[in-house]
Each structure stands twice: as C-alpha cells, then as structure tokens.
Amino acid sequence: MVALEGDLVVDAVPAISKRLAAIAGPGERVEVDLSAVTDIDSAGVALLSLFLKRMDASGREVALVRVPDSVKVTLELFPFVGARVAPDVERRAVFDRVGAWAEGIADLVLHFLVVAADTSWFVVTGVFKRRGVRWHVMFYEMAQMGSKALGVVSLIAFLVGATMALQSAAQLRQFGADIFVVDLIGISMTRELGPLMAAIVVAGRSGSAVAAEIGTMMISEEIDALKTMGLHPTRFLVVPKILAITITQPLITAFADAAGILGGFLVATFYLDVGAESFIQRLQESLFLKDVVTGLIKSVIFAWLIVSVGAICGFRTRGGADAVGRSTTTSVVAGIFAVIVADALASLVFYFGD
Amino acid sequence: MRSTFEYNIIVEDLIARYGDKTVLDGVNMKVRPSEVRVILGGSGCGKSTLLKHIIGLATPAGGKVELLGVDLASADEPDKDAVLGRVGMLFQGGALLNALTIHENVALPLREKTGLPGDVIDEMVAMKLALVGLSHAHDLTPPELSGGMKKRAALARAMAMDPAVLFADEPSAGLDPITAAALDELLISLKTQFGMSLVVVTHELASVETIADRVTMLDKGHVIAEGTLEEVKATPHPMVRAFFGREGEGEEEQRSVLQAFGSDGGRA
Ligand SMILES: Nc1ncnc2c1ncn2[C@@H]1O[C@H](COP(=O)(O)OP(=O)(O)OP(=O)(O)O)[C@@H](O)[C@H]1O
Ligand SMILES: [Mg+2]
Image 1 (cartoon, protein in one colour):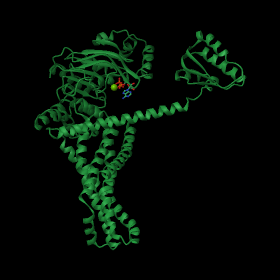
Image 2: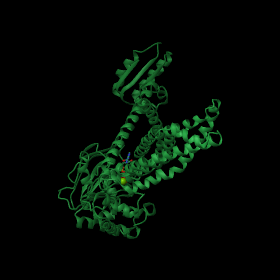
Image 3: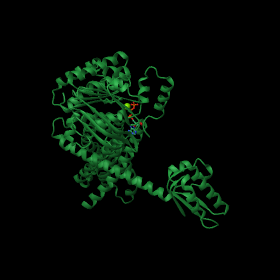
Image 4: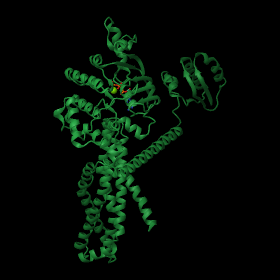
C-alpha cells in the first residue's frame, strides 16, 4: 500500500518517482491510494504508467484505488492507466447508499410531520375563523372522495362478505357450528375488513388524485403563485380535503360494513340454512357497538394518512409531467402501506387496550 | 398603495444555488418606488431565480434581500403575510390556478385576503380584466386561453391587490406588437398612477426602450451592467455589446458571443 498526495504534476514527479522506486521486486499486491491527489498532469500519468509496467514486469499485482473523480477523468484519457483504476470499494458504496436512503427517509418523515402539523393547526384555527376554511371546496371534495367511491367500496365489501361466508361455511359445517358465521362476518367486517377495504380503495382513488393535483400545481408554479399571494398551500389545498375525508370515510366504511354483512347474510340464509331471523338475532348478540366504533375510528385515521401521504407526494414533485406520474404511483403504494402499518399498530393498541 | 421606503427592494450580495450549482453569485440591486427596473440577460442566466429569491420563494444561500423593508428569509408569518399582501407576481408560465376560472383566479387574493363584500370584489376583478383586455374571458378556464391571454390574465391577478411592488417575468412574451405596446403603456401607468415599483424581465428591446427607468444586466451569475438604458448601452462588456447589437460592430464578434450564450445558460 502506498498513498500519494498533493499535486501529481511535473514539478512533483521527481520526488514521487523516488518513493515509487522503493517498491520493487516480486511481493504482495500493491495498492496505490490516490485519494489525496489534488491534481494530475500527463507527467503524473506517465509516472503511474511506468510504475504499473514495472510491477507487471515483476509479476506483482497492482491497482490504483480511491481515485478522486477529478483525477479519474484525466486517467481515463490514457487507456492503459485508466484500465487499472479499481472500482470504488463496494463496502463504501453500500454505506453511502444506506446513508442516502436513511437521509431520504428522515427527510420524508420530517416533511410528513411538517405537513401534518400545518394541517392540524389550520384545521383547528380555520374552523373558528371567518374565511378560515373554504367550505364550498370541502363539499366538492366530499363528493369526489366520498359519494363517488361509495359504489365500488360497497360492491367489493359485499363480495368479500359473501366469499368469506362461503369459505368458512365448509369448515364450520363440520362442527355443526354454522351459526358462528355470523360472528365471523360481523366482527371481522366492522373491526377490520370494512375500514381496510374502504381505505385501500380510497387510497387508490383519492390519494392518487391528491398527489396528481398538487404535483401538477407544483410543476406549473401554481403553488409558488399561491405562496406569493400569501395563501398557505397546506391551508388552501390540504385542509378542505382532510375535513371532507374526515366526514366521508366513516360513512363509506359504514356502508362497507353493511354491504359485507349483507353479503354474508345472503350466503348464510340461502346456502347455509341459517335462518334470516336467527342470523339477525345472533348478529345482535355478538356484535357490539364498540366493534363498529373501533372500526370507524380507524377509518378516520386511515383517511388522514391517505390524504397526508398524497399531499406530501404532491409537494415533493420536482421536474416535469413524468414526475407527476411518479408521485401519483408513489402516493398509492405509500398510502396503502401506511394504512396497513397503522392498522397493525391499531390492532396492537386495541388488543392490549381491551 | 404607495410605499414610503427609499428603496422598495434591496438585494445585497445575493448568492443563489440549486443543489451545488451556483446560479447567482453576489448580485446587488436596489429599486425605488415609482421605478421600472428591467432585468436583462441570456436565457438561463438566473433572472427568474432572482425574482424568486426577492419574493421569498427561495432562501438565499448567501447575502440579503429586503422587500418593503422586510427580510423574508427571517421574517415571521404575520410580517411575511403583510409584505406579500403588497406584492404581485406575474410568473413566467402564468401559474394561473387551472381549477378556477379567470374571474375566480383574479378574485382569489381579494377573497382570501380582504374582507371586501362579494360585489365589490367582482367589480374590481372586472376592472382589472378590462385593463388587460380580457373583459370577454371571465368565465373561461386557463386551459381555454391562448398563451398571450394567460399572460394577461396572470398580470390581472398580480395587480389584483394594488401592490406596491409588481414583478413581471416576461410579460410580453407571446404577445403581438400591438398588444405588447398596450401592455407597456399599462405598466408605465401603474408606475406613474400608483407609484409602484416594477421589476420586469424581458427580452423585447423595444419594450425596454419604452418602459425602463433603470436596467440591470446579468451574466454568469453577476451583474455586468447597471444604470439607465443609455449607461448600460455604453458599457464596454462584450455581452452587453452583443445584446444590443450596436452599429459598427462586426457580425463575427456578435455571433461568437451569441454562441457562448447558447452553449451554457447558467454557471456550472
Ligand atoms: N428548480 C431548479 N432546480 C435546479 N436548477 C434550476 C431550477 N430552476 C432553474 N434552474 C437553473 O438555474 C439557471 C437559471 O434559471 P432561471 O430560470 O433563473 O433562468 P432565466 O434567466 O429566467 O432564463 P429564461 O430567460 O430562459 O427564463 C438555469 O441554468 C436553470 O437550469
Ligand atoms: Mg426565466
């Protein structure tokens, strides 16, 4: 191992030449560390070239390592020397990558907290101020994020409810426990599946729409224009959406719960010979208000996550139209991921809270 | 709203960076009330960047910017809000809100920032749209406008709050000569009637002749000439000479400088 430093130029070459001359004869692999080299000219390159040839002649392995980019550019002009530049050690690159990744995540979390804090602040202060909240926009958003998602969410929940009843019927029948299909459907729909399915559909529909809207406004400087008019983009764009979805998401979820149970009900009465009356009676016995409310509370948390994630993906859009596309995709993946993580955390909380 | 400052805008040794690319490197500029300042320079030399730093959309990497006596980089929200309420900006791309009609776009700052009754706001919007010749376009949305109409609508929005300082990034780009001349008239009357400071980025030399009180010329992140149009024209800097293409100058020289223009917009 030999480390060279400073300017590897005409004036410095004689001295360095002497140092390199000391390395001679066969032996173990030589690494010439160039990390501290600040400049190199053709005299320096020639010196390295001679050294490499001498080592080759004596059958000794040699490599130029940790070459700064500025030096590498020069070396690559001379293929014989350039070819001996060792690729940057993988270990370093991995750490760099992990570092950059962690930095990115930290940055993202920070951004999330800022948007969340801004939103909470503007929601709380806005509700009590004249012109604090753009109510007409909120109603528009309620239609977009609520009514229009209702059909598809209900349909999916209905099918899932029916499928679950069918799938479990075979098992329960073996034990003559058909009636427990009611517990199964009722509790899993209200506590878990209703909120989750509604959130996943809304993340796909509205989370992406939020990201696309804000992302487009980022690249067309509309966000900048809002700022110069003294309008805070979070207050102006995110708050109405948060308020709207806070109202619509529990409603959609309630519909999903009902549709899922209806699906189970139809299968149970027509296929499982659980009578309609006993289904309803059992449902009343097994399903507590607490299950339903737990699910609705979760749905509101999911809704906030979906809108905030969509908003952040939008605000982080830089570049052109393709960047908007990327933000939109990211918002859906990240939104669903956030919802599922939150659901897992909520399960823990409610489980141990019981 | 006439301001009482000696200078509405003070830019001192401004350094602007995107990542590690330095776009502005020690820019100085002072703009008085009732002054039209024209910013000239090659494409990509940092004119829009300068405007963004002055109105606080970007934080300086060095130096200081004061707008109406307030340093936006360090000001708290209420101060910032107060200043921004007295500033209008016409963005290079218009930046109209696509979800709103032209009328709603111009009404937006009035609705959100003043307590004016709705009919007064509507009247003000109609006046501003008439000024830019868009009386017929109230109910159109930005995608339904031509490029020049967008520019004019954006100017109407920038003037909505009767600002003390108006920034205009290439207001007459994409306009025919007649409309462009009318726009110049409008800018001048904003200055004389309301005592506004105007900072205008433009490439139209005819327009510069008409409107400019003072000119600041940027190149490679530095101010290479500053003063009245005559003073700037008299600057011996080769870029300035190429820009104004003065008589008696060899075509050769002009072409070579213009090539330099094209090859590298900003500073690496
Ligand atoms: N958001 C950004 N990120 C990175 N670089 C940028 C960004 N915006 C501008 N730049 C770079 O900064 C330099 C100056 O850009 P700017 O938009 O200020 O130029 P300009 O003088 O307004 O040009 P034009 O006359 O073409 O509008 C350019 O080289 C550009 O590439
Ligand atoms: Mg520009």
